[in-house]
Amino acid sequence: MKVYQIHKNSLLMTEQEVPECGSNQILVKMKALALNHRDHLVVNGITRWKLKEDGRVPVADGAGEVVAIGKDVTELAVGDRVSSLIVPNWQDGEMTPAKLQGSPGGPGADGVAAEYVRFNETAVIKIPDYLSYQEAATLPCAALTAWNGVVEKSDLKPGNTVLILGTGGVSLFAMQFALMMGSEVIVTSSNDRKLMEVKRLGAHHTVNYAANPDWVDQVLQITNGLGVDHIAEVVGGSHLNTSLQCIRPGGTIAQIGAIQGVCDGNVDTAEIMYNAVNIKGVEVGSKAMHARMLRAMEVRQTKPVIDKVFEFSDLAEAIEYQGSGNHFGKIAVNL
Ligand SMILES: NC(=O)c1ccc[n+]([C@@H]2O[C@H](COP(=O)([O-])OP(=O)(O)OC[C@H]3O[C@@H](n4cnc5c(N)ncnc54)[C@H](OP(=O)(O)O)[C@@H]3O)[C@@H](O)[C@H]2O)c1
Image (cartoon, rainbow, N blue to C red):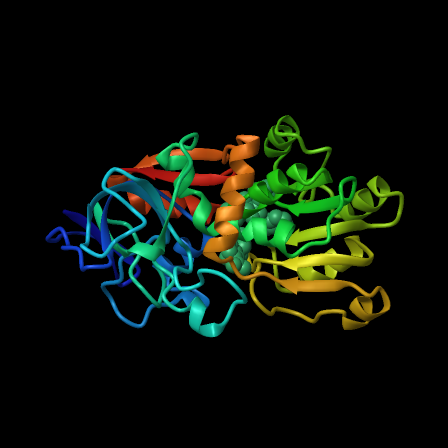
């Protein structure tokens, strides 16, 4: 079978034996992968995603069909459609450092960029019939994180205002979940074409943050000078200061991402204090949260937004495209 490995910040296609299942394991014939910002960081060895050794199999998220099961597997059968989990050891309950270990496609464990992948039975989740393999592959990291940041870790009530930053994978899921919660949604982007698309998807207000340096004023105007109730903060670094200008007193900033970097510049802690802002760090989510998200998506028949689908042989090109920021929503890979 064909398996990608990372060697010196490049992808190498290798030929390997199809793995055998242990007693509690399943073998999945992968049908689709989906990319995240972190896959670009892992392959290119950026920040904490830098790998210590060559040979890591890249890509965190994928979906496929179960083609073999070990003798002690009870919950899954051959023919089941499943997706990977972003933190397979966090099944339920509170997050702990131990539960976060072993996330696929990063420094801790091999990913899913292979024709066949062997998983522990608990390390996958069944996917609803209404989603294609490509659509289901987009969910483990980006959708779950957005769900955690907008639904599980929020006090949102119908009619509240939510600010979505940019139109990448996490952000468009955050927009969809905020709309599902009955929120009034403002989306920012550097691109007017993308803003037209988010309007079509249901966003109430759009703001071009690149063309308008005073875009925060637009957000304040939309909210009658008050600021928004909730922000899905994916930009990170000193951008938190900008988000603090957009949040209402007592509002919540779900700190999700670090597109701009992890700790550049200073953060205005007085602003956090005087306005009693809740800042909630969000780190992906558990399998139980993933199941609740799938249930809500199925009820609403929510479909992920997929910008472009690449072939498996073009994975390097797909990862480069992810890093470009030119995409709208998710990038999938067909196997
Ligand atoms: N905490 C967690 O568990 C977790 C999980 C998943 C992802 N993340 C992090 O969340 C972030 C987003 O991940 P992703 O996979 O969704 O990334 P992505 O798809 O690559 O997002 C790229 C988009 O970010 C937007 N962007 C860039 N700079 C911006 C700025 N200054 N203001 C507003 N938007 C800006 C751009 O949107 P426009 O083109 O529309 O301008 C760009 O297209 C990353 O930092 C990732 O590492 C964290």
